[in-house]
Length: 317
Image (tube, rainbow, N blue to C red; front, top):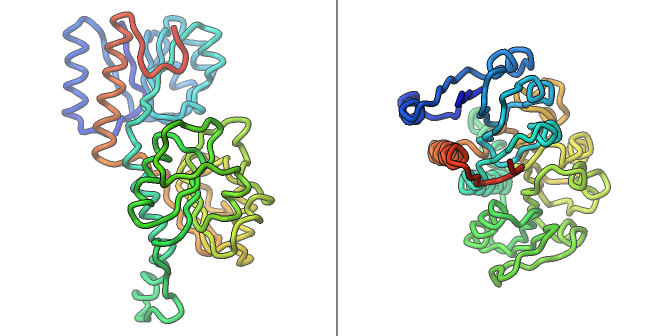
């Protein structure tokens, strides 16, 4: 089998060589490339591949359809909305993801962002560098506040666990409610969660139903003292509506790790200039530990597929 990795997996080169050596010892060829989002270049690199491996780089139907030998797409990411699944389905190409690799990494960053927002860390850090004091910038503790988790899956439930440990009340909303949830979690309708939460953290996938979920109307339902954290998918939030609410003082703050596009984010993006908005260039999933776990998952998935099975299935063969 010819296996092509179209972008870095974020692990040391010596670790990647170990995975490559194992595959080559089993008679497979393995090539890896630096990230390039040009479909023409992607096609040239993968045109003879049986397997394409990638992380969060867009993979269009054009590329998939122009790879006649392609049989498996191994995605080193949880979400797969950057891969044209319709094209893969048309060609009978199996797709697996790396679900679960970043649960801890994302949940920990969300907690850190909440603390930064509540304690006004960006503002007081700037004030300190300007030889100023905390005057007028005294923050709040998390304890005793209500956290609304939208999307109570693996990451959302871990975030809820961390917030609970900080003494927060936990509300949750999901399309499908889990059974046997901890007694500290209360499922509520979406509007109730939005109205009652002091912190809203998004952990839902991007689907036609969730696109624009946090629009002007729902943002308008939030408490003036509340904050919104998005480490899920950018289009789940109406960026302009969120920026307007922040700039007009109708919302206390926001932390945004994901946008409508992968970074670099254009300099004129409204959230880059919004008041009390902490922004990061899609880092929630990325820690040394999560990158190693991700590589383990995708190469294990590849081995299973090469032996006739499939795990972490998004589209079956």
